Image 1 (cartoon, rainbow, N blue to C red):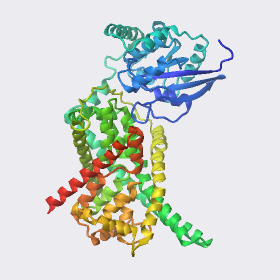
Image 2: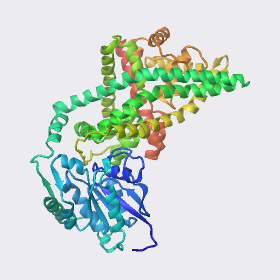
Image 3: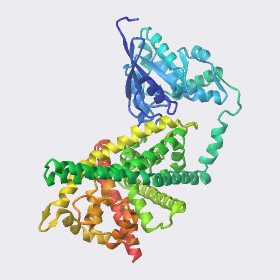
Image 4: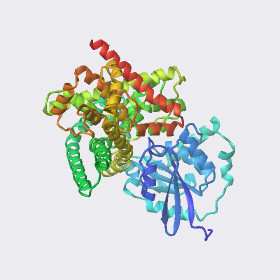
Length: 618
């Protein structure tokens, strides 16, 4: 061993859904999702950990099934492996289905001599009656083998010990020639590796159960059959929407009252020290009140939705949705994985856009990016729910909540149909092409780790999304206050803008104030309704109105009818994405053209639908 060297780089590789990121998190302590969906190991992540005086840099490369580079993830994994940057490799395998994982392991062993096979999820394997003989597996593969259960930190200390011992061997670069000099394997080589993987698994794995995956198969008969899979999916998300809608009401009200009361205290504090009225207006009536509204409206539903969403993800259900909707998306010229990005869009469209990275085809990825705004995000839910409860569902109690949840689910289903329609139009016009094939991993069903799910969803998703929304809301609050308080020709800029858009509002069954509110609400969807109230009441700052009855009276007094409510729901569902999402689209596509199209597409659809509603209603 080179005694002077105390730092090594280790490539962490493996198939999707084997717990690779869980191993990464447990060793490095970094926050990163488990799995191979959006926001996870799409690009190489790195983290450091120390063991007995040696520092290891762990590179969590994208999940891959082989080094043949059949997808963007596999290409990234391949390039890192053959680059020679890694001093060694850890290949994480699923103990419940070892044979499938050994194909990649055997390839990496040939490319990186100092490799360790980490057989993870060994606790789940034991529950299924599956036993992995680590000594036999090590003998047949020629590399060290460690059995782990990363979710409970079992076996990770032994893994570190083996890594340290393995680094004492001088690196042999000769065996890396195969993958650095050839781009692919021929069919004969593939067959040889596959047969070898089957032989090794057959000799090193035993099972006392004749059907170890019986439980998974039973659930899949329900979740994956066309007659039951779609209804169950709608029922599950209906329940999630109902819990989100009902559960967020009370905490939102408390937050709103508390934050607005704090704003009043800060106003009194500023005036007590002699601050000018315009400064209090900018800081409190403008910036702070917009910020308070965004937090009180966004935080409770996100704090409920994201954990529920993550529980379904942890359970292993989300890839089944992609499977069920694959045929629909194929008919639309898109990819079934787009279903996952759509579901992410329900929490935040910016997250949904980022999630489109999991789609391999650039054309289909772009379709998913351009159509994600048709899914209503958490910022639009409160507006839709309020309109439903005021104009369509007047029943109180649990039945009223159930009807409101059903109506909200119906709105989301409309968004799904519009997404499929827009995807079809794009695939037949500016983004022509044949739908590509892809590999979809259906992970085993696992008991969700509720504690970790809550922490992960709150820190990694809720707080992250809320932070971005608040960043956008601060300049928005300043802009709205200025527009509401600067007078030109006897009227405020806000009034002038709403008057300018009055003809367009009448054309689509709305009014100029509503159109103006959507435009000024570009930084954050949450503030559209407060801007409408501010304009109707001729106030210079955002108005707090938590009483639904008072809100209904104000809206009807300003000409709202049931037709207005229908058009408002449509425009809330179909309008340009918020500033945060647009910036994300620009970053993901690298193109201003596609960003502008992503804004124009849902807006045009919304305008046409509202015009149709007005015409039919008449």
